[in-house]
Image (cartoon, rainbow, N blue to C red; front, side, top):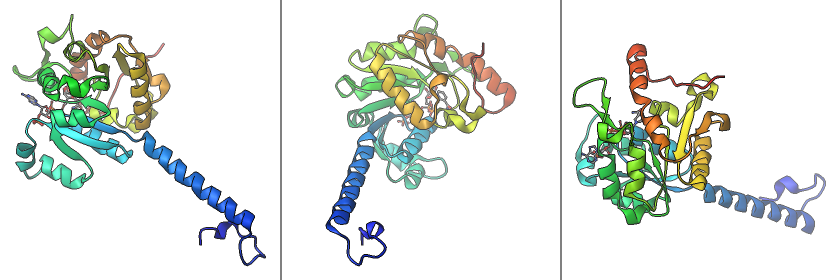
Amino acid sequence: MFWLPFIHSNSVKPSIFEFKFSSLFFIILFFSFDSIKLHSMKIGILGTGGVGRAFATRLSGLGHDVMMGTRDPKATLEKTGEGSFSLFLTLNPGVKLGTFAESAAYGEMVINVSKGSNAIDVIKSAGEKNLNGKVLIDITNPLDFSKGMPPSLIPELSNTNSVGEETQRTVPGAKVVKTLNTMWNGLMINPNLIADGHHVNYLCGNDSDAKEKVKKLLKEFGWKEESLVDLGDITGARATEATLPIWLRVYGARKSGAFNFQIVS
Ligand SMILES: NC(=O)c1ccc[n+]([C@@H]2O[C@H](COP(=O)([O-])OP(=O)(O)OC[C@H]3O[C@@H](n4cnc5c(N)ncnc54)[C@H](OP(=O)(O)O)[C@@H]3O)[C@@H](O)[C@H]2O)c1
């Protein structure tokens, strides 16, 4: 019986006081569970590649409610076998799949992890009305793989522009925060895999509250406050996206993505 822990050793039945006390305990427990639930969010993930899947698995594991977005859900589900999205869903039955627009509409917060060269098309498909007022995390990189490896930065989306800025221009009502795009996805969602989590992650965006909300989510992944460096407004994305050429060269030299950069002074 639920009052058992509160029964005095030499009493047979709980006293009124003990009963009330134990009821209070369970009421508090009920509301604590409720407040934990309140922290869980509906999150839309635009993209079904390796990064999208890593985020979906991690966010579901943290208790968030995830809908991933793809161009054509039926076509995405029809593919079977090793590495297929249908196999991923079998292993992650709590994750939902919809179109980019459905995923954006579902999420209280939305994460864009689509192919960088098509990231703006994906944002347009997701729809301005589904993104207005929401925090939109942009993790994409403007990479051109057309001339082989290593890829180069797409000229129109680099140097004096970035996918982050182009995203903000496309959906001015959304609060775009660029972050996590400077590392391998395994570290994005689990920074403590290396160096006890002591490595850098940049954020930039025009809305301070949105950056605070994103920081809160990053801390759920294990990011430490001192590792999170705010680069200011969304034009900071020019700089973070421009770290990709050096990241790719280091990756080529080390043959492993499990590394990151750190600021020391
Ligand atoms: N891999 C990493 O560790 C890493 C690290 C840092 C940043 N990033 C960035 O994260 C993003 C995702 O990377 P990823 O390797 O998971 O996946 P990806 O292969 O770059 O992108 C997969 C997603 O892009 C969509 N897509 C592809 N071509 C499209 C087109 N023509 N029009 C509209 N959508 C299209 C796909 O839609 P469908 O679902 O319909 O196929 C899919 O959902 C990239 O921007 C990448 O630069 C990756």
